[in-house]
Image (cartoon, rainbow, N blue to C red; front, top):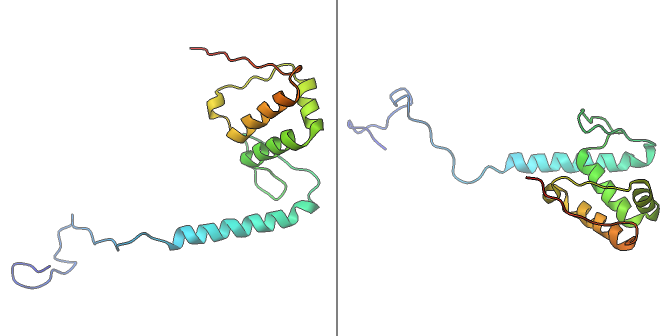
Length: 134
């Protein structure tokens, strides 16, 4: 682009509203680097799991440290336990006569499937009911 006098404008002669052009294409280094960092972190964490004897979890607090669980991890563990551990199913069915699930459409799909699997395994002990409140 040239100006009226035939010279290319310099940054000093540009209007303050004129922004430099962004490079074309999508920026790749940041997402790639973030993914590598996450993979390395998860790999280190999984290598240390055998050394950890108890975990800490707080849904409202900061869950930092090698012995803490994130909310998503707790949901995955609960789902796995309900599907693979009969003792966990008996604890749920025998210890809790009512299981209220608020806004089930927002509940993790695999966890809801696990609840339905427990219901199918224990049909006499588990009844379902739907209630909508407006």
